[in-house]
Image 1 (cartoon, rainbow over the protein chains, first blue to last red):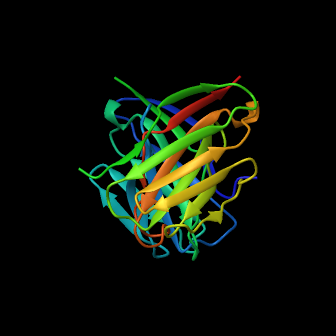
Image 2: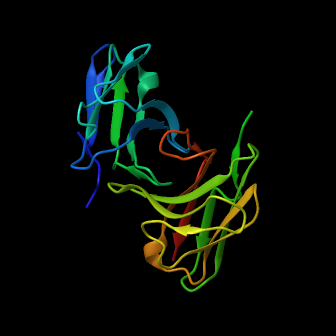
Length: 110
Length: 114
């Protein structure tokens, strides 16, 4: 059973459209991270959120951490082909472990 | 440019063979991790190490062991490879705790066990 559930599993959109990826859990996390992984590469950190209700913006990407620190979302505005990749959320607790979701594969068509 | 380097990008082994996966980081990080990545399952933690010669089991340690003799190097060992260990293996490192610090990943080692 996945501790962190990501939805949708796959997302294919046209360039210029918006998209949202969700990450949900019944557990409370001290932090939530989002990574993007491109084919043949390791995941690369996009953002870390640590406060319930926190919203962070990185250019066209907006990340939100739920008030109860159990869920998060990633919203991309005006998606571009360069946004294509596997998006992974990861929840941190007070030990050395991060729990990863199964990932959302995003394809942006030109 | 900071880097985590995994020794082999692709390996093909036979059932029962011993397999070594090597990982080296040049960032002087205390903490190093081995994950396996399977479609639909995400990344699952096999083992991690927070200091030289120290190791802790992750969520799926069965069938694996690790070695950390030097700070920069963390090795994953499959004593007797089995077909269900066919997977992508990712090494990562970070300084401090991983729950807020950035995990730096290698490019991955894709292992096929026949």
